[in-house]
Amino acid sequence: MIIEMATSAIISIGSAPTYGASETALFVAQEAEKGRRRLEDSYTFGMAGKGVLSELIETAIACREPNWDGYGAAPVTDSTYHLAEQFLRTLPLGIAPPTIGAEPDGQLTIEWFRSPRRTLSVSISPEGNLHYAALIGAAKAFGTEPFYGDAPVVIVNFIHRVLAS
Amino acid sequence: MSNGGDVPAIDSDEWLARYIYYSRHVRPDGTVRPDTFIPHPYPDLSVTRHLQLSEGELWQVGRVIARQTSKTLHGRADTQVFVFEKQQLRVVANPVLPDNPNHANVTGWPVDKPAQKIIAQQIATEASKVLLPPEI
Image (cartoon, rainbow over all chains, first blue to last red; front, side):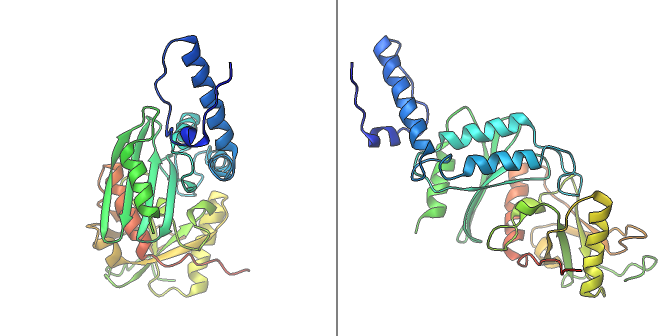
């Protein structure tokens, strides 16, 4: 059986879709996932290809011991790292790469920064909450979204707004 | 260096330094990430008042802390007191003797994490570019 899937169809899958239960549906889902992983590894589309996942690992390692900032910071835990990786992988393919950092309370931060007044920072808490804050011109927004395995629409929209020309 | 026995009142126009000991708190363009202004251990953010310190003395304070904590001093971001006050925060003198009589805490932070983040972000926009320590 040969199933072809256009790249655009894979790109449009922003996060894990719901699958049918038949053998064919499972096969299609597996192939779509493989395609998505290949695109993630590409420089054009994916966080892995753009080096963001490597930056995430480096940050998590650098901040795994207490007091990594010299002011008594809490360590970044493995669970926080895994949540951050999962979050990055669920972002729509082709989105501009963020930079990675860490906050003294042990949360990893993912930042899209275009200028001081066009910036979005998302903190990943060990409990799986995404705390975000955005400055877009004179407007500001902040809040918390739970992370259930899909990138929350509100955060994806803020990424687009920060990066819009 | 200012005398720890006689702590001058905090003035809204005076400058504060936040020393940076983690390289990723500095963006590639030299601006400071808001991450460094998240208060932890909550509820205080540690800063150093410039007061009458010379540049050399200011860097010396940062280097002493670096030595005590076995960290590398990557730079410092300077901010005026009124930048914190605009965010409904207060700067309270908190001399640490003998090493840093100019030490102060920024207090009054909200408990809520996203509220802390948006404040930290606004402070970062008004902070100086990160100044690099001079070579010894």
